[in-house]
Picture 1: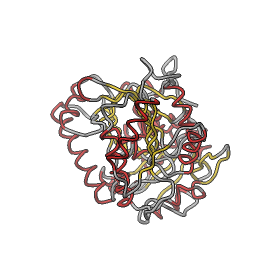
Picture 2 (picture 1 turned 90 degrees about the vertical axis):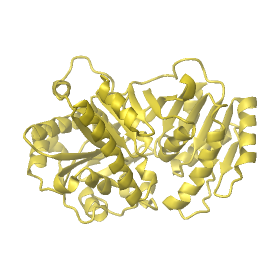
Picture 3 (picture 1 turned 90 degrees about the horizontal axis):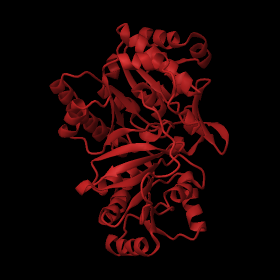
Picture 4 (picture 1 turned 180 degrees about the vertical axis):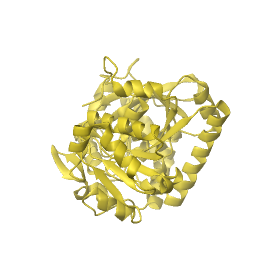
Length: 427
């Protein structure tokens, strides 16, 4: 269920209003915006963008780091540069700010290396992977993922077999030790959070030794609001906490909500480009639905010749108002970041050459969404709302005052009809 704006403000709303720190969500791919609306996303971090944010009345900002597409060393170096830029801008403006690392709800990414950039070795790391509206919950010490109506341990999903970020642990304390170089973690049980409220979280954060990890169980947005109150309580009493979370908790702590949209605002776009770089089973099934509807898919591989392919795609855009470009479903690479980057370069090269002939884009996959938005020449986007649970609609700001609808569909979100349904909403 999507979080909708509530009527009377609750205790958390009052506490957030009293906290004058600006919240900057550092997103390791664009899918962190799947729980929010009415907030800007910086796609190309730069000093002017951060100066403008701190000079404005906006309380929250999303910054795309896209570090999941990078090696660990490159990811931490890039994140450090971005944090330094934000910190310098905040000091110039005389404004305090809070960083939240937003990451994947199926436990992929440079989780602990990025947290260490923010000082997690000398603080307590609050790790909140639950994403209730996407069917990802933290219960009985494990991360569970809803697939075809059934909750499964994340270790039993394709995400645990990721060639770069794979893992074998079936409980989160063991997972932290496995991928976090032996770090210590403790769970805060769901019943304790519901019985004792914020106190259960605050006590865990205040008593945790430096370098340790606190993981709250959560099934609902209300559970996550209790976690946010506990975080604020612990900070008020002097605890130093680094935050890494999935999209829902980042939104809760930033004071943002998701607005459900039935369709894209404005006129219906004439030429729609669908771009898919994700290799998940969900992505493959969604492409198959489009094929079954009679829409041809142009595939891109590591050896693709871009010029002739662009000509084919552009012709389809002009004649049919729709073109689909996707990475080949049978991979000829080893699944590494380097080989994946080669294919992504080909895919984004195609998008770049089509930037003047598309009126809307549906991007499938987190890294795909980031790379394609930048290939179109955008530096900033505005999150309008959610077309479906976990599927964000952006207004992508291009040059010359032009903006186009841009739909971000995470690789691990949606049933077989997800892309097709979004296409119907746009058209």
